[in-house]
Image 1: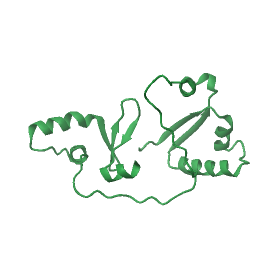
Image 2: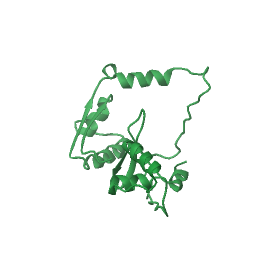
Image 3: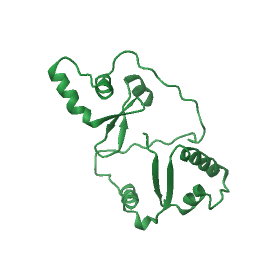
Image 4: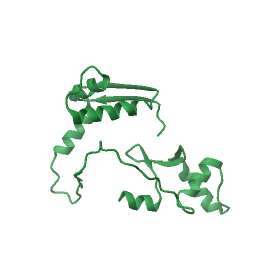
Amino acid sequence: MGAKVVTTLIDSRLAANQINGSFETRDQRMEKYVKIVRRLIQSFRQFTIKQIPRSENRRADALSKLASTCFDHLSKKVLVEVLKERIIDERQVNALTTIGPTWMTPFMEYLQRGMLPDNYGEARKIRIKASSYVLVNGELYRRGFTASWLKCVNQAKGMEVL
């Protein structure tokens, strides 16, 4: 996303101090996670991690209460996926190239070069909607309503994600 200064708040004193190097990691699996985090930290200009007790962290407290609440009477379901493999096992990722224009093309052209379609109505729509989009390292992101930036993908990548 292009962030260079990151402050991380975490409720685990053990994890915070292991990442800072104050505590040593004794578990091999945790050591792998700490190595990955330390490698990622190097990509930031400034990184700080701070342990905050859960009692002082309203967001984490609200999230834990939400997760423990029973919503059986509602028709909406929350899908949970149990991963069979650990995420610390690194894999090769192949980038997909887009063939031809996609729904993202007009937004990318407008944000990169200021180019708009000849049709006045379409150009107006793109100008209005473009305020919700941003280009970061050539990739299009959309501002989420309740979340941070959402990465926009083409149809092939969307099918791969699903």
